[in-house]
Length: 231
Image (cartoon, rainbow, N blue to C red; front, side, top):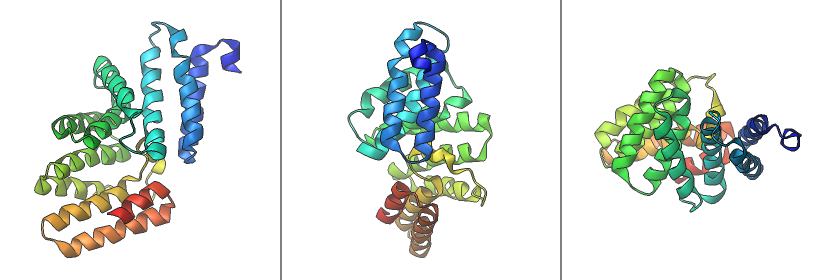
């Protein structure tokens, strides 16, 4: 209705909210359609100050939806995250944009540009520390742990993985999965098992692998479960 009424900014915000609700319900195909509707309206805002923050929000949510449906290296993600990276550089280190920075990190990490991925992980940590929210710190720490892990720097990766698990608690907010496509504890356990194995701690590696599967099973989150089983 807002779109038809010409209330463009409110309409874009409404499409973003609708997309976020769909992501929370793992309705990724629906989320893609809703978020794309919001992006299609951006041109009507011209140079309005609200345009760039809204675009960051839409792209930050759209990325995980495409990852869940088309894979982490889907061609559609390349221009999307290139644009998101440009926007984040223009807007600066704003805590609310940690999810955008994390999305860009995923893109560079999957394409094995590990030097750039490490720089982005360090940026995620700066943003998360300013936000000072445990769940956001966990997600940012994960980027740093992964960056070191895939660089073969296992002794540096291990304490970051351990720091994530130390922040876990029964009432943890799981809504962050709408930005990441997977649960941070389940994925931490799975990847940490590889780190521990590489360091020779095989018993601990098996224990973390089993823990990751248990966490994902309890959450009943399919993509997290697949990741945990794979590892």
